[in-house]
Image 1 (tube, rainbow, N blue to C red):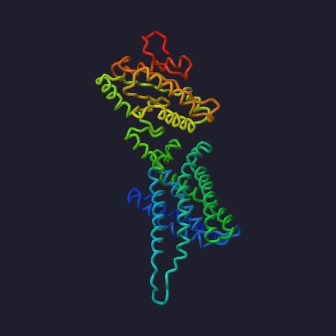
Image 2: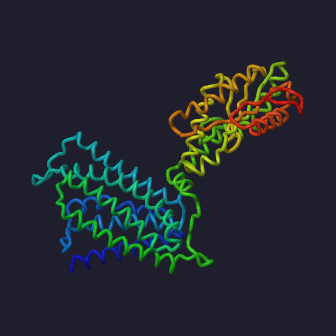
Length: 425
């Protein structure tokens, strides 16, 4: 009974202090809250390894049950009230700071410490054990922190927007995963008995419910917006994951460099920036230039039948097939959702038709064995100067030929220079 009351008192104290610092972030700055969140990680790991309270249902560590569960709850609350770009700061700070601490402690192993008065020598054995647990626990915390945010958002589909059940279920699932993972490392490194597994899990489930109550009460009673609502991201999971993992920064860098983040080919912005200059240069040098618009046939059906993740993978594989089937100096752009443009300077129309047929055949060949019916493409081709004297003329002709290819049954190339109204083929 005393042990249970002690854990509840610790949880109340932990949340009260952290919530106070969280509330003061507008005046004191977010750094105070974040530093308080991270400074206790060594103590959490130490207590999780050596300090247990015996309760009727097993051994309970306050470091794991109160402090670690509380930290995860604070990270979730920070996300709910702020956003993914804010919450990733402590997530990555904890990861790098804890790894640095272990690395600095490891450096000390290369030096034999002096004996202090009274015959006292530093015993680094515990530090070695804690170092390994710190690495393992920090890795789990990093995974837990991202997973709990994604799960919290996913649960909106299943339980609605109510905060308490989403927070409680998120904490229950992620803390269960963490208990299994951390106990495995703890048992391997310190020989912790199996009683700590069940006992720790039951205590973490109680902590999940308790902290979910605290979070819901605090955010609804203390940090309501002026309109009576609390923060809700309203973003796709992929967008949230991109922000949590800094992928959106990588994608922005690719956009700035003219690369499409999904397929790795040049993007639409790069096409609009450079294609007109390429056409003008070719015409001024009296050289031909060909433009092919490649459109994936029935792409919406691929997304509807197999999902958008598979659809994205199809686009990536098609981009690879196109790259492997053009000359080294040809340029491939992602022009739209499932449309690509291939720009070939110095290529006459007859050669461009041969290359377009090679592109058309390369796409289904890249999916042999992957789909019951391999994706295909339709291609509309235009060449200057025969099809026009500027970029827009080429696009109009190629787009008209693409429309004809789809009208004629798809999975074909249309690009003849016949006058309008004559058969294209």
